[in-house]
Length: 189
Image (spheres, rainbow, N blue to C red):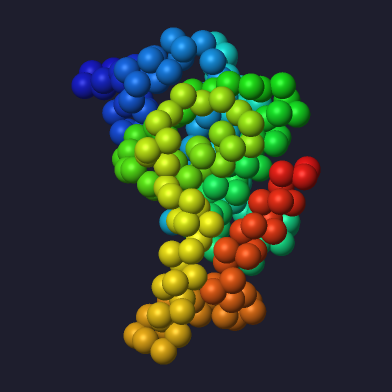
């Protein structure tokens, strides 16, 4: 066909894959801990390379936390940490012990949800090389910053910030308590 161009790396052209970064991760010859986020959810997978396409060994989605009794949002730092713990427990059942982190094209920001998810995964007993300095503080992981903001927002102009939680009878001021309860529940699985 005249004028048609064959693109060998379609995902690169679409801005979906950095093949240099992917090759470095694959050279580690370990399963990859794939962490992705959207505005509403966090999802994680343990993936192994296969010539026919990557094989998913285990996966966890922050929506699964709702089934375990989580009443808060599924896209915050505490939810990311708990999703990481949940995947760690699933991975232990599949005999996975060590992974390398794959955040794809997402920005690497110190203390972000991505690193909260990684910290949860590592705290469940898995090995992933990373610096503890990049993970969020314990207070942020437990959701203390959300509880403090909720207390300040009760009468202020940010009252509508928690309207969705109020409709579901969830109290954002109790997020640290609920976090600890769910963490113990996941750890006991």
